[in-house]
Image (tube, rainbow, N blue to C red; front, side):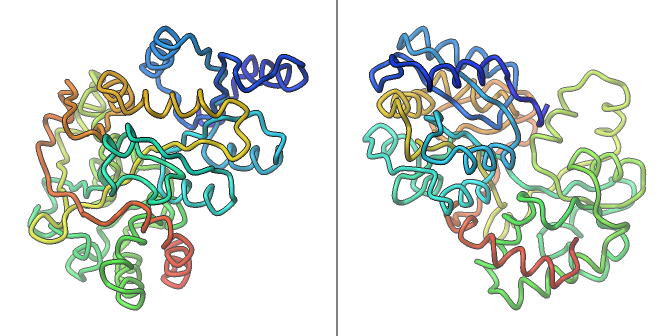
Amino acid sequence: MHSLIRFAAAAALAAATMSPSYAADEPVLNLYSARHYQTDEALYDNFTKATGIKINRIEASDEQLLERLKSEGANSPADILLIVDAARLWQAQQLGLFQPVKSTVLDDRIPAKFRDPAGNWFGFSYRARVIVYNKAAVNASDVATYEALADPKNKGKVCTRSGSHPYNLSLIGSEIADLGEAKAEAWAKGVTANMARAPKGGDTDQIKAVAAGECGIALSNTYYYARLLRSTQPADREVVAKTAVVFPDQAGKGTHVNISGAGVMKNAPHRDNAVKFLEYLAGNDAQRYFADGNNEWPIVASVTVANPALDAFGKFKIDPLPIATLGKNTTEAQRVADRAGWK
């Protein structure tokens, strides 16, 4: 799915760019999205019903969309870029892809922690990066913090995806903000020294490796575990039965979180429609669709989501570090991962 491109939408966008009627007041929104969940269909349909604005959509991975936008340059038809990690949002901002948005609705609804201070992008849902452990082999008290992943007592127990993946770069970035670069590097080296095997696969692969006893603990975003919690497949139920989740640092800074977020493109041909779409995403109904589409939490604190997996996680303390800081630390985080040998 991550490589999916909606060719019909792409053709529509290409045709629009060549049409004399392609104007700023046209009831159209061109959306480049790294999200591709069935519940999002209702999200987009409801926007069109409420506003009369048709959404043309191209879907691909964050990285593919950024490459496409760089290639298209100032002639890009994109109005909105919707991607799923702070590191990628920062990358897009550094490429000069966004334009700042001033919106009372967004400022009132989206907490400052979850948006760019200059209004280049806004978060709309969040997830936590947690520690999954094998209940038969590891005590929860031994993995109560992220720092515990580097403790010698956990040698040979850690499974993780690549240190260069944005999810881990954002976590390393949060450690840099909390500990400083030198201590964060020492921590990353400790995590690497404790690995049960070389990094490979995605977060679901790490969870399954923990259940299989290939390793004792792993890092994962909460929505991967939530998918397993909501699954009716016997194999998935078995994985859940053998594992449990710790929200790290509840006695300290709180658990690291990351976001899905979006911004208006610098050369957006339908800027007003794009701002309306962002404001729509901050509304109660859209927040529920947006978050539940990937088993995440809504950014707007007053919004509740009827999701049994999220309910099972319960409430937890969130690291107050501004999401924008994670992006700013991405380059430094990559250097730390490289020096630590976290490939």
